Image (tube, rainbow, N blue to C red; front, side, top):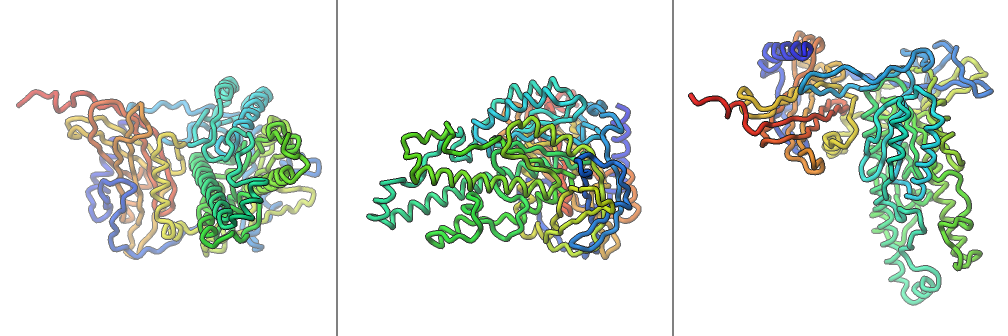
Length: 612
């Protein structure tokens, strides 16, 4: 309680003396929904002096595959696009050096909520993603049985969190070292039928076009009708793949934002049947019909209109996901949920008996299977290589792969450098790390995209609202990149029967830029979305405010010694409510979010006061 009182007192002083009283220093854009457009004022010329620390986690092994633990900073050389960079950060991370710390036990005062990471550990954190969106129910059942076997072999002290991806990304178990709790979660998990797969159960899918004799007849008698059917099937498949990519990219983005506030390396162990697209693709357009079938881009479709409809551009969004992973130090370890895949000719689930197994149907079925496996494994290798992880496929024993992932990513070196190339043109920059010790084999992420966030926002103005809307979903993982504390106060006579939400934001995570006017400029959004306790799908209301700060040096120093403030208020009828709180630094795009609760009494304090 003392901590809360101290915060309230300092906050009141800061607001009255430094911020709220200075109308020319901090301008609030008013209360509005985060999806609405914010009116722009004439921009003040700003001198942008941004730099970026690039962090690279490096795994070092000798010729026998054993971890090398005695390397120094002088043993490494880092190059970016072939040009050597100065190493500014060096550290060796060894989980055996310091024991695992338990989850944060500090209790918060009444009505106070915080999005700081709740688990502290000096070993690499492990997140297991059970992907039901891109995996059939048949293989989800296999994954569940393998997970039970994996937990039986998991050593004590390994911090693990479990998420499930279906229509939404759901947290099944937050970080814990309690094996008993992890086993309960897996045993209770029943999987989820995918709404974007042609055959979510894993049984043979029904072809959308005619087959065999009917196909030959249609081709001969009505070729135009056949072309229309083919176009419909291609467009339908493209739309389906479009949904898979959109849901997958959104889930990966949420996971990256959730992990951003946790220090050190994080291993994302992704149990999936298929990574739907090259997450780190470096091309202007991705033809979905080709990408989904493992074919090279540029294949001509029957008509130009169909080709246009089946082409989607994901370059910028995928680059953003790539950089979120890089900034959060996330290495991805995709594991094929199918295990060891045999020929479709001998797969009992396909039931090819009676279909001329040695004929054209079987040949096409096997050819399609090979294409799908090639594309899936190629995408797995891509995301693993470019994040410093490792892909596992075409093997049985998923439990051994899981244990191998955790052991593989637990001991590593952290290198950091400030790129000499300050031209943020969005291109992919290759990172090369070498060692002066020739007997050492290194593995690390292969690069990053030099993305300018301001330029990205201009090209995709809808993305900021979409990201903020996801952050305000109470089912979405809590984002920790921009950390803050919030005080949610029920109605009182002083607040005129409104719920008041006061945000206390860490100023060191906010980008301040010095303008030509000599002031320090920042732009921060704070928002709250209120839900009834039994229906988190339909919000009651959303409130948001934009804080556009332009402060002098003395105020800037005060903020850095305390916090950056924001405040919202909302009038609610009596009842209990869930509240999702979120903040965003608009200059960098980083987010923070947290879940809160508030109770509005049946009669407010003002109503209960005696009449005068």
